[in-house]
Length: 432
Image (cartoon, rainbow, N blue to C red):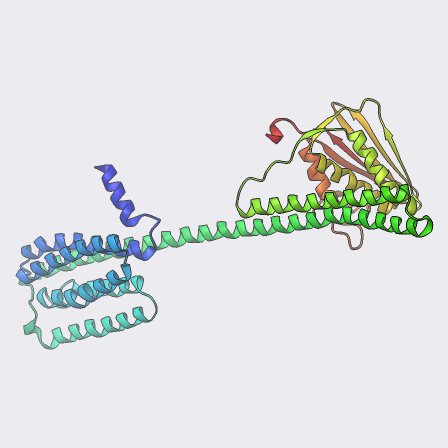
């Protein structure tokens, strides 16, 4: 029985329904309940057979409208039928047969106007409310000038009972309606606030994604540009030789890496738009020493052209590190590129085992990082270089954290900067 009642309540007043639909269902149920109560009450206070007949008609109409609206879904038509038949026909009939303005019917006139405002909108609402004002006012004036056409109650007690019953019914109906409307409004505002926050987070995520993509793609483009220039100069001076071929091969490799970045970014964007969990990157055992040597070999010609000495030290028996090779390449590349940008004469890169992990240090003899900027230098959008994006070190910090490590920066004015990265590697749980 309780399960049946729960299903019925959800079908008529569930949150999946529009507010006006729930309001109409409540009005129809209230009309049914009111008529079932008013019919015997009218007999008790001698309201007459006409009053009893009208209550039976309202009960039947309420049942029909509930059935028809659930079956057809045409609630707009049901609104018009309710307003036309109940408010414009049956309410005036009740008024004439059950006491006129010396009864509870004027309270129901207020009920009719309020529910019309709730159910309709725009021009329809204005038209029907004005029509109700005219009709109900005319009925009150008519009852005053022609009292002989009104079926008055026989005693003051009958009139008092009718007013009290009408007051209770209308008060409960309006209270429930206002409560329902307020709850619906509050829930809607909460949903809008959640949607707004989600939109802001999505916009921020997109902004950060495109900023990171722009920053990371500039690196292979810069390498391709530099090596293309080297190749052109070599061809002009000595013609194509082995070094020229190496430079062209480097351009090809960096173009492939750029294409892989673009493909990875596209996958991330598709994942976000489809609201799915981002796919994991491949985790393998990475030889950090070998990776560092390859990057130094790649960047040494660039450093030499700037008059910089780029050296590397690899400790003995460097252990393999479980991680994302692409991310670790980005990590070392970003820090090394920063060192080349700011160094005056020398850059040193070292890789050593330390406490079940690996420490990579990149030192330069540049001007250093301003003291006031140092605490914020790894925050998103903070850059000490004019025209810089301020995302490189933020990306480095995130990569280090994903590899269960830490990153620290030591700097002195006009003496240089040392960036130390300690990496433990990703655990099995991190990439399942």
